[in-house]
Image 1 (tube, rainbow, N blue to C red):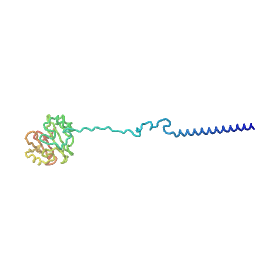
Image 2: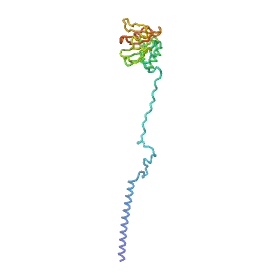
Image 3: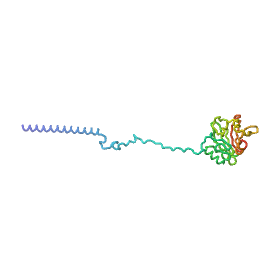
Image 4: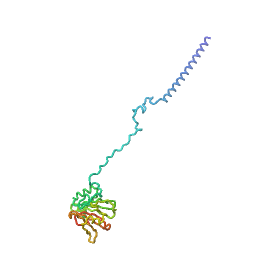
Length: 251
């Protein structure tokens, strides 16, 4: 009897040990699963590596989100032209017995060329032309349709300034005028009325290049109104010089 109880005790002890090992194994498996799950769901920063929000100061924008704006350098405005002779409106120029606008008879040629350069005129013919008189001009029509203005050189100074209608200008084209309002497109009768003592003649023996000359003081410059070349009885050119008729050829 005693021996059997001893066997029973041994058997019971063995079964108890087996259950204990099974329980320990089950607990170990559960702990492992919990640890794995914890790693899979660990919050940002749990591993010790700082997140972008932790590594950057609060309020510092990300370069990719807030790129540096492109700026265009400010261009300095070009200075405005200055001086009374720059880019004038030739329609405001006055025709007198001394000249037209800033160009006067007897003006030193170098000074005339300098004024022309200021105006942006063509001065390519201002030097020796091989038999033709040097000249300067705008290089384009004064108005929108065919008025031309030429300044001619004599020995060493300006000896002729001429405004001429080439035949294509409109009668309302802006242009220089005398104090009486005379210019190209004026009628011969208007010239005669303004200058009752004016002389009349023609450049050519056959009557071509007819003109009316005003010389109120009887000396100095003369004002010549040529007419009839474009339209009968209408002025087509105004010249200022020191001789008794408009210049015919400058070559």
